[in-house]
Image 1 (cartoon, helix red, strand yellow):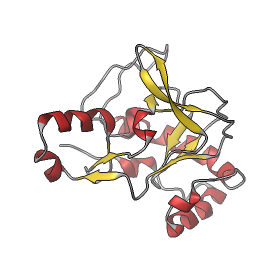
Image 2 (image 1 turned 90 degrees about the vertical axis):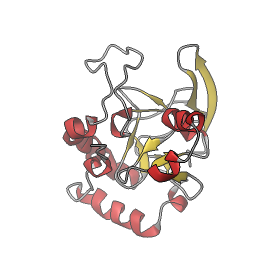
Image 3 (image 1 turned 120 degrees about the vertical axis):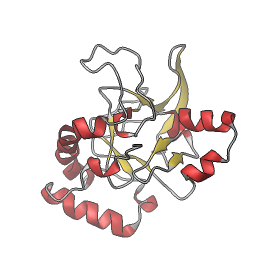
Length: 195
């Protein structure tokens, strides 16, 4: 479930569509939650699907730590990649704005933590990283964990319209860990090895 103050818009010919903020979204705000309407497709289910459907999954789904494809039912599947994202995933099945997002600004993720199937070279944004690899989590998890630790306390003060979609037990664990930062689950827990 995407934050309600977002919409799908045409970005440009290269990116096509993306998710854009319609109102100000404060740093620390939960921007996406995996909810009960998102489709979980096991590898066995995927193997029984046509090549065309598998291609759609490869484009729009991400792989969770169990190796299942997660296909968002809403516009969440249109959040584009950036090596300098303004949203970041957590090991709690939700994402957080890691900086303020202004109206008209595109919401972006680093696909490096989504267990991509094959390396790919995204649009060049002028950053050191040029390729997204399937095992980027193993390379960058310490840096990414620090990003979440830095912003986690702000989630407790920000207005959170999506917490009703987070299991109560999960939200309690996250809030407790956010207070001290050191007990937060590592994004490394999201890694899935295809080997």
